[in-house]
Image (cartoon, rainbow, N blue to C red; front, side, top):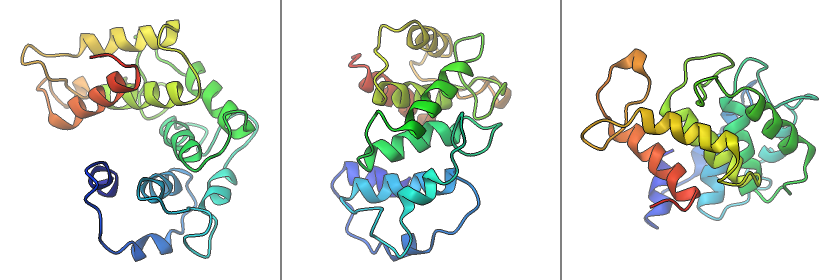
Length: 187
């Protein structure tokens, strides 16, 4: 995640060798390295001896990507696959998109897992992922998610993450929300 931030500032010039050694039995652990590599214009298919895109896709089943109880692996998996150039028509992306949409909580938000308490961080990431897969900003699911996010804005203008962790604004959650608003072209 640090690489993504530095890449956004065009300030990443450090060694990436540590990304040569991804070995995991979880889809989510391939999504972040793919995003980091594509952020610095490296090919995640050829950067190491493992094709990270194919490895990530190997965790797909007929309905979603990765852990059947998690949503975060679908959200970040789709962002990783899209950043690596996979077409929006790819079956893995389409199945994950459907899984995300089907698992929106009644309050309009998403948590990291199916039926987990909604938080602004995962809701914002879900918005970005859905927009990246072609869901329009005026879609009802996106509007419900925005309503959820608005309900978590504090008087100081910032956002809290999850009410289970307190009601204070934090910069990380606020940054996630700004990312989603930017994806939706909302000032």
